[in-house]
Length: 415
Ligand SMILES: [Zn+2]
Image (cartoon, rainbow, N blue to C red; front, top):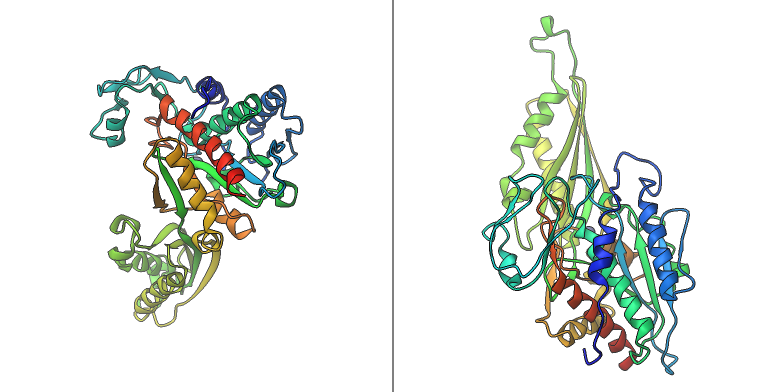
């Protein structure tokens, strides 16, 4: 950046992670936990203090804000930056005490509140790229919340910089902070009409320089088995236990199509829950692949496996219901190649090697893209998320801020 920046990203980050925003998959409300609004309210306050005058928190826990254009060009598309405020239900987010390990030299990082929690380079190979940097961790008993408060802090700092550096020319910039991403509901109540953006970038990726334009396509499947019940004392030749059928089906699924047996661009079928008794049982599956067409082939594997197993239980029957969950965003992004291309250009202008990657999962962006807002994911610097050894570096977060500023300018320049 030619403009010298007084970064505010680190102090913002250290402030945000101390607010517990864990989401709850069991809750039926939106946001799933009321406490997420505590962060939302603080962000609105800070945006108003920066001078972003329309910042507000809606009743569903979403934060919206607009940075008006400062360019003479009238044709610059409206671009949105998006991060999620909640943290994972997998690990406590209560009482987070962030620690800054200044000038990291490759040593083990022992977390003081639970000294069995040690970040070693061999378990965190990306730490090799952080020598001399300031690495932030939690204290050992909670997650850190860099996923995705790093993204939130980076977007907030970028807003601050844009307001304070009018020489950085940009079109209208929209900000969206969502609740409940970690429980798959991050965009359920997002008002895209109100946002009015042409494209968005989630800032929720891992390694500095990376951009993700591909996610899994995802279906859920429910297999319902109807068996034959009998008194266990008089069941010989009669009983056909739905539970035993379910167990055999799960045990028979091919390893080559399991999460533990796949990587890279391979898809899988994964049983995530089983319920039942002798007469009736259900298995819930998730089905994942980058290639949408393969989802039905994978569902067919479940069907074939069920047929095979049920051949030995002639009076039992089953039903398989498939429910679409989300789709690979690449198909949408490919229709507007400049969105990813400008992102890559901005990463290079920030002085990094830009690398295009795919995510073995979904993002808010995969659903936003199909709701009409094409949304790739750019790096936020977060690592080892959803656990007590989560970390992020100060220098990576600053690179994200620079990338966002460049991205705003690239859109202005090329319009
Ligand atoms: Zn995230």
